Image 1 (cartoon, rainbow, N blue to C red):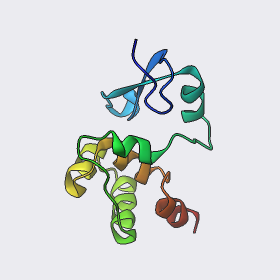
Image 2: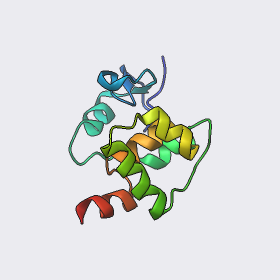
Image 3: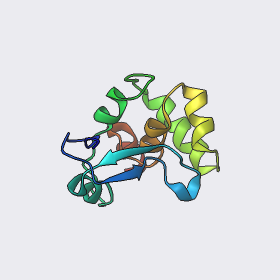
Length: 110
């Protein structure tokens, strides 16, 4: 049995990191509690945990890059193209584009 990607408890399902509806294929194991958290509007699943487990490792995105990522996503760019351009994982690109990081939350709320 695999362990939850976020908390380490036994996982009960595989969650698409990038939504399947937009072409996501990578999944991570999650327990029921963390799966409920990831689908809540105030998601508490940590970007840090996802980045630590990323094959590319942790990667900091500056505010200017965050603005560019949000603009690219709003103009219809695919997450895989954003991830490639900034050398970040699809997970990280998705979090930044959806306003789930400290900088992108600030930019999207103004």
